[in-house]
Length: 150
View: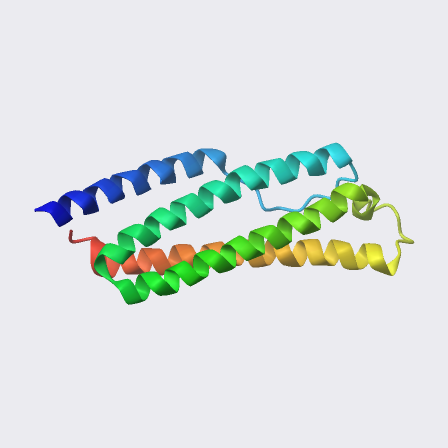
């Protein structure tokens, strides 16, 4: 049957993307490193990871869409939100990269602006991580209900 073949192809592609993603393994832990080079590398690492995550979830959406358009539509909205959160996190890391002394924990007299920038970085990091976790849960539940028996 043609639909089974398409489903299998999309499943295999999703599996390969999952393997690629597991090799990247971005660490969301925020470290107090007051170095422009460090933050440049972090931005690069996150970009690579985030692009692969978006690719993975887009493939998951395609697979879900074969079985349930309503649920896949909700998932597509979550992908859009994840993209927004990722952009915000990158923007916040760019601000830190431009002024890495914000991350200097030894500086006890940081300005209010520096403290706010650091807090915003931490907040956007958590939002991105938590949204991705919720997407994984949503997809796993969808998989258990709709795809495991295929």
